[in-house]
Every structure is written in C-alpha cells, then in structure tokens.
Length: 68
Image (tube, rainbow, N blue to C red; front, side):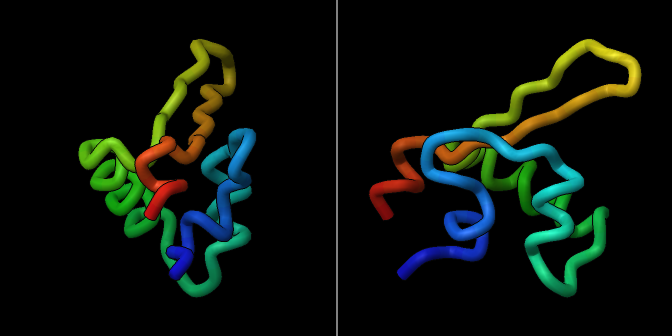
C-alpha cells in the first residue's frame, strides 16, 4: 500500500517543500515539516538543502520507502 508521501514525491526525482504541501491535501506546513523530519530520521526520505536565497529544500524517497 502506497503512503501519501510515496504518491506525492516522484519515485525518481525530488520535490520542493511547497510543492509537497500543495499535493498533500489538508495538512499544515508545521505538521508536514514534522512528518518529513520523522521520515528523514527513519531514513525513508532524503532532505537536500541548497544554500541559496531564498533557501531551497527538496525531498526524495529513499530505496527503503520505495520498497515498502
């Protein structure tokens, strides 16, 4: 069974935080941020931060989550 994040984040690629927030229906930015941090600590998503102005953060699925 696919999770919401497996559906939201492409299998081969990344999405910015704001785009995930648009795709995942009915969730606040704060809750999404907390959930993505939890998924990152469980090694289910990879977070990449770009030192740009404005700051850009992208997320990608790990192989571990793809296999679930």
